[in-house]
Length: 307
Image (cartoon, rainbow, N blue to C red; front, top):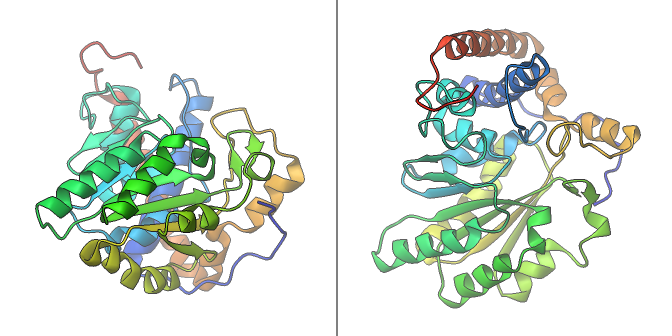
């Protein structure tokens, strides 16, 4: 995908809940980067900076018992669903209060009807299985799975789409297409399009090019209801941007490409829509994350944990 330069998007103001959900993900991940820089976190992490509006947009369109399958870049998926920065940070740092006892870390989280994994493409066949369970038991639920544009290089994606369409499964595939697969531009490794791949199996397809959460929900609500009640699988492709590196210190993009991505960031667009209110909530969420981090890092390690 070629990212073209453009002004920050003109966006309509959000209600307090949506605005704080966006800012929660943004400031949580910024705090993670600060903690790494201070030597207080081990390993690595994959931030979703720039992509936060995707799970925030989808969250109210998904039922509590819909099963969400996330990936290696899943902090935003988790926080949009549970608003639990303390549990997630405790998980990442292996401290008391961790969502999964500190054994899952950044990428492997299981909580209720939510599961994340760092294995690319692994979750889509599992999500198809969950969707089959929902259909067989006549439950009004769907399986939603987040993948990136690079995940289309995995054969399991195509096997799952084939079965989902053949067996008419309530499967929602959310593609966060940020134009780069780890360090390789998508244009250098993907022939054709995501649309073409979905349509090859007869699977429904919808492309989202806006950051406007109101518009995204209006567009997707009827389509997601068809997935849920008419068992018509759907691929939704978000044309989005990744502001940070793939992981840490591995951003091979030219500076001008990163700058063009920053110009498309939702942060400036939503601030411009209502600056005073935006700044008030921005400050509030920053303080919250600071307090959460201070609290979590004072907790003892879970048994066998390493900070």
